[in-house]
Image 1 (spheres, one colour):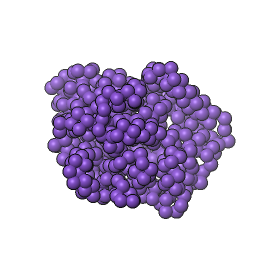
Image 2 (image 1 turned 180 degrees about the vertical axis):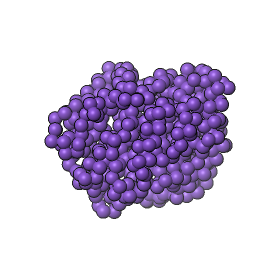
Image 3 (image 1 turned 135 degrees about the vertical axis):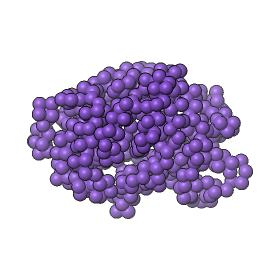
Image 4 (image 1 turned 180 degrees about the horizontal axis):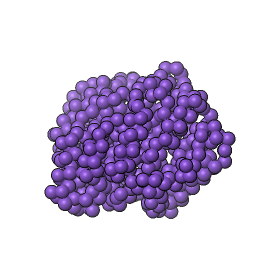
Length: 494
């Protein structure tokens, strides 16, 4: 079967951040190729060919779309319509597709939506399309059954040892490299899937059923070796939901780097209470670890209880300080505007954030993810309507621009707080920083990609960047009373 795997365009949301190649797409495309299918990867974030020409050339029988951010929904819908007009079976995967699976199938954008891992489920789906058409036998599948939409229970049972290594020759690797602090050619890869915790706002609860499974570390290292030797890769950002390396895996990374004379650095997202020993952090540094993103979310104990993410503030502070001591950069990630969050709780988050010696702050607005415990609560209380939310794509850019506020805090207060931390991230000067002014070079790299795709694309990107920059400057400077209310001072003059 001829299968086209599509990563839809997400516009400035992707161009303005570090561009990630969709992990599930690459794994599934590689797996399908290993089974003898003819495979094409059409990554519309870096491939600006007209979709009509790509369809006419490849003539796919099945099109699989991956929509990781909601900003890619619009393009995904347009590609779906084109695929159906070309007589293709259309399948959607990834988090946004899983969250809106009934709406996507019910509105005719896809024949099937897969929730969770896609590789073995797609194989089973193709078998049923060819033979019995008993789609109820495929787990995590949403489809039209008679006159209604049906969904089977999600079970993730892919054998991560049996899934082949990613075939990076399926894409233009050079176009996917991005600059990142400590490296010039960084690429996203993974060592595990899922997370064992059950944060109420997180997609992990419905997408991976709160399971954490590791991929053989040797697979990862062999891929890195290939990419460094062939393409000059010098950085890897592990896109695990939660990086949990044991001592043996850290030692294996160190040994592999040394034996093969590899120079790559790496980083990932983890919890600040995952590694409490500075000796472990030193070993991670020796293995090439140079940055860690910490999902801190809030400084309010009350909010922590609600989102089911208990963490001790002192443990977090000590972890950040230990990382600075060993030379690992830290990014502190927070979420503001949780449902029913109060000004008092937001003040607690701001106060806590300002005590942290992180290299960068990543403040985002709460985005409702349907089928999560918190999302289900909003639906049950009639605060959001799934059909209306999907069709209007309200959440498309909510992380960066507040489109829906479920908290008890004013829009203006939320925008001032986020903009303040965005601004100081670009100007932050730590006394003992692992990397000073790291995001200035990152911003320059982002600008260098704006011209990709022609003049029209460049204009859209420049306008998006200018709008974002002016928004940050406006809200971070023009409301001194709000800044005073939340204790927002200049950390560079502290």
